[in-house]
Length: 364
Image (cartoon, rainbow, N blue to C red; front, side, top):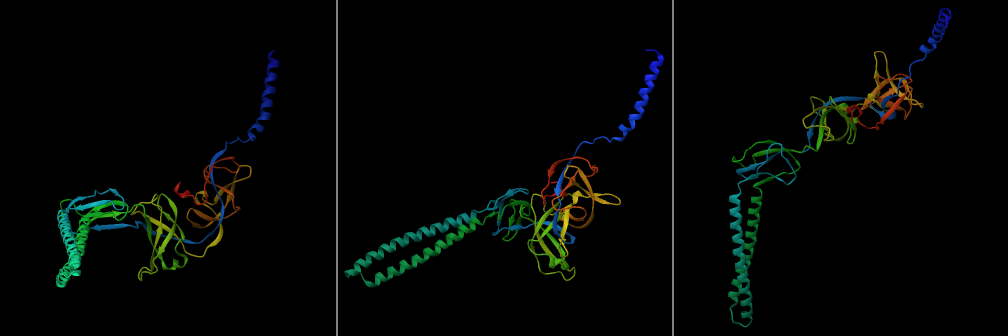
């Protein structure tokens, strides 16, 4: 091949490449499927809400006192977990043990006297039938037998009392819990009614919150509310309301049952309460919202497993869900994880579908 032919071939190749290159540039690169997690859009009754402060407390938190005075021989350590009925403190019970032994001796003596008198009465009754014993002697023995029987009953009661006092020398846990504080130490002498330790049930938890009186008409036992702190939001249920408001603060107390696995006693929380009439609205998990400077939108999954961008207007929130207005229908799958980097029309790979009440806001 001469140089002229080579030059012509090179020029034709460059011209063909230049003509075909725009077609290559016009084709966008195929993006891999995005890994996402989804939840259903649901129609729910949503009411306007307010947030009020609250504290996590235990339903069983007691300062346990000694029933008797005496010297402590042992006290459970702070942090010890105990079961109901398990000993948590003991007094020196020597004096009560001696009293029990003394009362047992009285009972045994009176039982012996009663047995003897019963035999004497039976013997004299037989003799009286043959006029071999006087009627007066029989009546005296009968009277002594009845008096001894009553004395035995009194002695048995005294023995029972002494045994009860001896058991009170040991302080037992009235419920399952953890020793959180000791007010007295072993070898100290304490008086009856003096606090020995503090026992707290760490499993029976609830939130105490103060609600405005204006919200009272929207609250009742079993009302669903949301409990939140800086790390999580969990659904909960009102256990009871105290129907008496404070004259100064215009607030009333309510107690809300919570799951002990999510909260710690003494923790400060916020409680979301209904503060108006509920209305039907389409809702999505709060985590589904993508917030931009001039718009708020979500991604729903189309029938071809592609992301569809839907602009929405937000309304009232409740728990981990919020009401929205947009092109959404009941049961639409909404992206709740992975939406930040998702693009319109991108294929998706659904890793997980969250349940309706799952704590998305708490990353559960």
